[in-house]
Structures are given as structure tokens and as C-alpha cells.
Length: 601
Image (cartoon, rainbow, N blue to C red; front, side, top):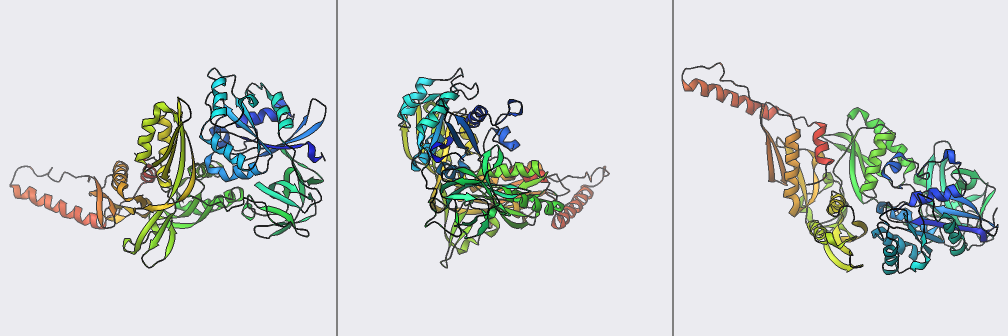
């Protein structure tokens, strides 16, 4: 085993699409962990969806051997982190496993919203920050301006910034030297009681859960009895080792190391990211700080398109849960869509990822209901409870007040688009709390706004009005009072439970109108008129009508008295009235998809 003084633990933090995975590729190639013929881009991204979207969803770790210019050998542990705001907690646990961070800034984009938030996260954990300017080979690269932003926005010394091109491999040698010289070696005592942080885990169908850990104190060997401090469960260690793309078994892991353990753990749900592992016979005094339960913030119901596929969907979700502990689900049912599941997600991207994984990896055809957030309801009898499903929303007469979750949104944009962005935020009920010009061209806006308003089309519209230049980051802050209403959609006078939504009362009319118009275009015409109505309680606030298919009953009636024609028309009218009373409207699947999958407006 390599001594602790020659271990360096670091992570790469950056805004989305600043070249984090490409830089990791170059570091791995330089460390000769993979032959050139076996190499592929984004080598740490295992899922197809990660490669296609160019995002990291599941953080990875890799140990890179490096021989310095003085011929001393070092072990560099790179802990790769997701870049998206939905996975901030995973990022924070990965950061707390390190002593240093490479803060990556795109030379063509400059400092953006998540560059700032990730840097503050690293500073909270007292990490040594090494600024790195990437994409210097691009024509649009503006290195002097990027250095000025690093000094002005981040407060870091621009002369310390390393210039690299992850795509071309320029400056990688200097980067390795900086990691060794500027990032401190881990502190930790080999003879102290075992204390290790779980920063991630994944499921292997043959070996069970593989737990990713960083040792702060002590030694971890095969055959040791260990204890998870959160739920006090105990296991015997079967295997310990290092990540070198493949899992490489070792005799032991000691203080300062990053590696993995296998201990016969059956499901990912038994392991909590951020929990502390200690020895069962010689436990440490206190767990490592920063652990919290990951709570879902966005909720939606999943139904199979064909109700016969319910058992298959259930099996698919169970398998998915093995790999993603943050997915929460319970059984649900709907009169319109049959049996399904109510699921909780970390955010909208997490919801989209689960949806794509169900469709690709498990070949499931599913319908997601409109996403909702968790509302706090105070009843008149003094009871307090949370509601995320419109079906559980109590009668209006019982409710004294309602509160919804708010976020603190940080938007960095070129000043040219300031007016459009402010209009969008006001439309989404945002309240501006701060605005500061980072320089003569860029401005940072801070808004308090309801999370529910961000769910639908906020991000897409922000990108389109700023031509892709605005960057967005948010933190969930607190619950604030709101005027909440349950919007019901009625077909032929009957409420369709799967289309019900919890909405802000003042926006209920607009939402109801959009849903009714979409349904009118999707529902096939019947022999009778079909009214489509949006209702708040007993009050109808929007209506569209699908006109009836009419048979020409007057075709055989040529000439003669007008009373003959009137008699035939009255007879037809009576028949349609009777048909309307007994007739059921079949909602095609495309109607659900049109309402639920398409963005607002």
C-alpha cells in the first residue's frame, strides 16, 4: 500500500457542459488506466442517457497512479461529481471526501451560476481550490476575460489558473504537477478507531451493493465487523479494494484512502449516502458531519399504457430502486388509468432520467401524470399535513391555510437579456431579492419563487429567451403561504381523476383553458356532444366542446309538411340526449400525453 503522504484526493467541479467528463478522460488516459484501443469518450459515464445528454448523473471514483518528475509515485483519487442542481447532495458528499478541487471554467462561457454555487460548497468543506481554464483551443475562447471573472466573481488569484484543453490534451502534465504540489495530503491516523464516509454506492447483480467510501481514520480489512452509524446495522466485510475503472481488490484500505467495500448488503436502500462506517468492536465517538436524509421534492404518478403491464412495471421499479436509493414510490390507482405508482423525485431532471431508463432499460411504455410539489395544509381543526397528490386534497371547507415550497433562484445572464428574464420571473411569481452587475456585460439576479412554477417550462423558456446564455441554479429554502386550489377536469360531467392538478388559484383559469383546448383536439368525436370542463369545486371556469357526429335524418324527407322534418329532428335530439346520459367517453392515451407531457403555454 502507498503511504498516506503520497495520496491526493480531489474532485472536479464545474457548471454543466464545461468539460468535466472530458478532463477526467484525459487524466485517466495519462495515468494509463486503459489502453488507447479500449478507450471511449466519457469513460466514467456508464449510462447511455449520460452519454447522449452529455451529463453526469451517477458520480464515479477512480484511482490514478502518477509518477512525478522526481520519480516519486503518487496515487491520485479522482471523485467525479454530477453537475446538475438535482444532485447537489451527492456533490456535497463527494466534495467532503476530498482535500482539493479542480474548479473548471469554460474559456468560451466564463463563470456561470453553478460554478459559483459549487465553489461555495467546496469552500464550506475547506478544500484547496485549483482554478482551471478549459477549452483554450476554441476560437471563441477569451482567456483574459475568463481570468478577470475568476478574480472578480470568485475572488481567486487568476495567476494560479492553469490553462488546459481537455479535448486536445494541452496542459495535462502541468495539471498533474499542480494536483501533487497544491492539494494537501489527507490527514488521518491509521491506529485510530475506524471512521469512513459513504459518498456513493451502486448495485451489482452478482455481488450485491458495492459501497464507495473515503477512510478518514483507521484501517479496513477483509473479515472485519463494521457498523453503519445511521441505522446501527452491522455487516462483515467480504472484499475491499480500489477503483481503477475496474474494481481492483487489495488487502486493506487505510486512513486517507478512497475505495470500495462489499459486505453482503442486499439493496441500495440499506445504504445511506453520507452515513459513517465504523468498527463494530471499536467504534468511533461521533459520526462525520453533514449527513441528511435525501427528500424528494417533485411528485408524479406512473401508470403503464396497457394496464396488463402493471406487474412488469412493478418489477422494473424494484430493479431501478436497487440502483437509485433516492427514488421513492408507493402504490397508487386511478379510475381513468388503473393501477400505478406514486413516485417522488429529487427534481425534474431526475424524473426525466427515471422515465427514460424505464423506457430504454426495461422496455416499459408508461404515462406520467403532471408533476406536483409537496404542499403543507393546515386544517381548521388544527391538524397539519402534507399533500402532493390531488386525489388526497381535502374539501375546501376544511382548509384554513396552505403553504408551498419556495426556492432561492440564482440566474447569471448577459445584461442584454435582462428585461426578458425579469418578465419571465415575474410571470412565475418570482420576487427579486438582489441584482448585481458582475461586470459591464453580465448580471446576477437572485429571486425567491415557488418551486411549482419552475416545474413546467421555466428552464426551457429561460434558455430560449437568453439564446442559451443564461445559467440557472437554485436551493430550496422554506414554505410560504399560498392560495391553492384543486383543478378538476370533467368529461361529459364526470371528473377524470388522473387529470386533476393542484394549482395557484389565480392561474387556475389559464391552466384549465390550456388543458381543455388540448383535450378537444385529442378526443375523437362521438354520436353525442362531449363537454370538456375545467372546474374549481362546483364552479366551472373553462369549457370546450367536442361536436357530435350528425346523421342527416332529413335526407329521405323530400317535400311535405315542415312538421315531418321537425318530428324527425326532435326524435334525433331525444336519442342523442339518451345516448349522452348512458354513453361513456373513452379517453385515448394520446390525450393524456398531450396534457401531461407537453410543457405549459
